[in-house]
Length: 403
Image 1 (cartoon, rainbow, N blue to C red):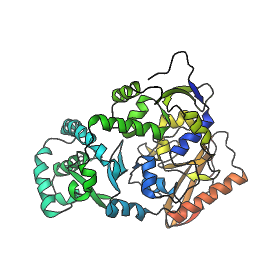
Image 2 (tube, rainbow, N blue to C red):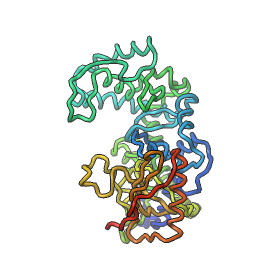
Image 3 (cartoon, rainbow, N blue to C red):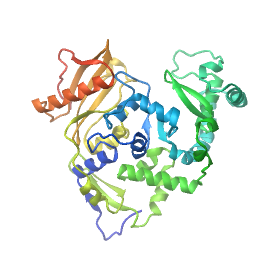
């Protein structure tokens, strides 16, 4: 969709855009004690990851927005109250149960896509296990992959080497026949979907058009301003062509073009937004001045290119980079202060302490007394959150900025 050729696009300054984007991602106001399910609905989803150098990503994402958050609260919503479920967006995520009906399109598309892909990747034979796996769960109850047995000669060079029953489990979960009942030691425990997902979520059946409209609308409202490609990538449900078609069918009362300034002078992008985007930005309060440690998987940073364009912050996770080739470290946490990403910090739990190995300020960021006090308060909070003493600082932990 494009506005009238004679009408210049609206303009959004970089500062206003950063402030609005932070607010949409739950980082524009002081951490509050709002309902946890409501917070996740506002974000859309929270990515799950197993790495816990300090604490697992999903817990750190929520704790950065809700100071009273504790990991057992998420487990309660997932496993007892069933107001959330686990499934796939761009990666494994915690998703509000109210969104479950819109995952039916995802189930069908994954069935087509994964069946062909996994025959090549995982090998033949997993499809023959579907009935066996379903019957095992139907009669015997929830299972973990290791309980199903199966054998395959392991390739020591392969990161993911699944036996056919494990592949069948994952396929049946990805396509909606199974759901995750709970996790034990971070291992997924699978059960029949009808025994996990509430009936109200299972009986609602939106059609494809309704689902795509919901997905595109929800993505834009959470991003604030976006291209069709960014809208499609948010849930990773609609294709780019479907997102473009959705944008093209909106009228000027639904979408307008807006020129959004990037962090670098002259680096503006023409994106789509709601007609009142400038008024929304004006109403958005200044973000709090304190420092927050963000998870490497934080929603603010999920789209690395967007974060670099909007905040001037280039970030990469280096867990799969050989140690001698890492620029910063295995698992380094971004630091948010106000509406700026001001640095990154390498820290981990070790022997009951929060050990801080290195802090790199961004170029142009001074580590004055006030900022160091704010960083210290945040590190104290992180130590309390993950149940350890600290922080303890290694010699030479404050490093030079890197261009």
